[in-house]
Image (tube, rainbow, N blue to C red; front, side, top):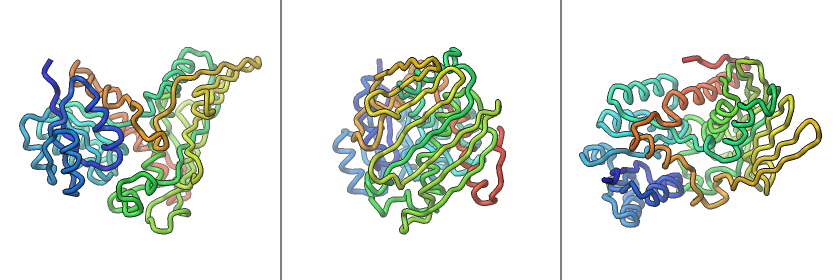
Length: 344
């Protein structure tokens, strides 16, 4: 089989830790082009992976041999660069949050459709083994009716792992558009939609900046979410969990409580109403603490979608629905009102 020719646009931490090594590991892929505005950085990456270096993404996209690209850029560039790539006839894997507005997300989806290309969003939490197992238990009726949930994603902040430290675009509102809520919160809105199998319809939120005095984006957010069937719960996203990362989710059901990534050894703990406890050791969740060569599964799923001409497992429409929950949270924090999530 001829290998897929891949380009990576943006060579920061997420490309270095996830996209590049996972593409390099994949037997059906060849990394042929990499792009970054930092010339030293892109030259080093190009040398490491035997690829051609570009400092301009439009020049990279004019490389006619490309089959697909990863877009690993600051959030404000996700939509314009993804759309340019799709219009150039290239499949796109875009980091999350996929865009900075619903309109941008819709334009990305339309570009993929118009050009007959795959658009996948990098929501890796769906592929974590404990999350997949929990979804099976919920769908099979093992947990009974779901009453409530709480989920959190927090760590000490991107300055600890971003290639640019405190100078990172993550802290610049013009480039990031949103802070911890977009970096981490959107992962959990996507996860909750996936686990519960229904949409989040209403949001009440406090979205604040209180731990990073050098940033002009949020670093702490707490939201109350309500789903279409009336399940209520909380979501916390934070760059102020300074000692240890928290990436846990707890689902409270009629017949059992599911504790996901809440125990250091057992990635899923099921506590049944009758007192029985079942522990699952399904492998560690990918985190910034682990150092990152663990498989996110995203790259493999993207490649499979291209090779087998299937719909991606996290298409643009799914990315947009998860983004819309974040946009509702920002609106709620601003207006001090409960906000309905935009339905598309």
